Image 1 (cartoon, rainbow over the protein chains, first blue to last red):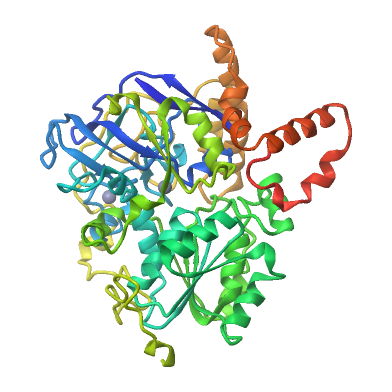
Image 2 (image 1 turned 135 degrees about the vertical axis):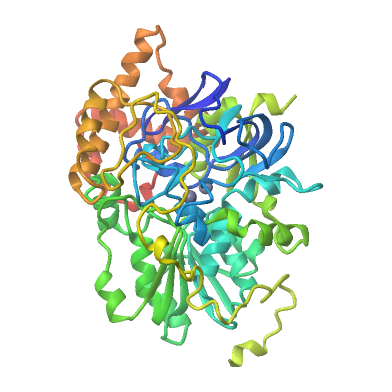
Length: 384
Length: 170
Ligand SMILES: [Zn+2]
Ligand SMILES: [Zn+2]
């Protein structure tokens, strides 16, 4: 079968790989019909996530048709078209029982901080991902959800990560009616976080980014204010000024370790890897939120040290909430929102790329070419 | 709450998920039984047979019930990874060797390609075709910079200081 094949920083190709096999009685094999390239794949693509081994297949956002099931799979049958949450969760460990499906303790032997994630390095369990024709899906009774009748597959594939992550970012902000919410980052997740902030009753939503076409997009899609930090002297001062010198009630970091905008952070974090990526967005978030406010983090940061203004977290009495989205917990509500037209995820998809052209897809997305917001990969077996 | 007098009716679903209890929000710790306080008390899933080498964090007593088998450790990078997994996730000696191993692994990947008679097409793997299509100037600049570097010109230092250079510089 064809699959994306990581060869080193900024080098990927599509290769012939062996078909995935059932390795565990609760496994399913899924024939992929859509998979996305995600902003967090770029951390892997750039070689910033430790234990990203050559030869692995990325892709944690995918949907597909069940081809084969293990002996203990009861909730799915061959032929079901399913959307597969990006977190691999057992459904019965201490953490899954709290609804923390993003923190499962039975899906990743390689690290305890993070649960298993499809195609997300060996630090996240060493699973091949869905940027392929076929993929092994463990714990098939727990994660995969049959796509409701009539739902557009393009909507469904965004329910595997982007929508729940954006929604949970807003939820973790503890937004109260009338709150001012600032979102750093106008990538797909930031766009969705801005959109979902309204659902929690935000009174004002402001998005900060540095790419004009993304700002334009989020302004239209999420009906919010959007500003380019390259045009301001200091984004923190800008936010203080525009909030009567108080700061925002809630700030969402939807950027993570690839942040631009601060020379020191870029050199120490992205060029010399003295810290795990640049923590620019996190600095801005902590410094621009109101005292007593809440910082919600869904941007991905690397596992070693970040030079973070933790002193200000104490001084300002902040609540910091951060997590991988627990997709499974949020799905029922989000499916409802999509079906009722409250959310329209597929509008984010700007590019449809054949799986065979995966290298171009990565380059297009990472270099922000051709006004790309969200690319979706279509395997040859899904095009027939 | 002066600002709430605004009309939000143009925003579909405004306030639909507002919850005064959501402060600071999910999850709340459930009431736990004594049994649930003590370690691995849940009924563990069937263990996936360990038929490839799996390096596991020393911060857990076992291998999780399922795991990926994407790229088992091999070669020199594998030696380095085995060393890294002697240290906890709390240690630089875990993460830094892993980053080093990743770089070694890239070279191993190229050697492996060659052994199989495959010369990697770097231009294609880097997706420069897309960049050529959508940003010719950027790509040419990049190559010019690289050429200048090879020639030993110190263009690099002035470039490196610019954030605008972003994630796509090689
Ligand atoms: Zn993603
Ligand atoms: Zn679990």
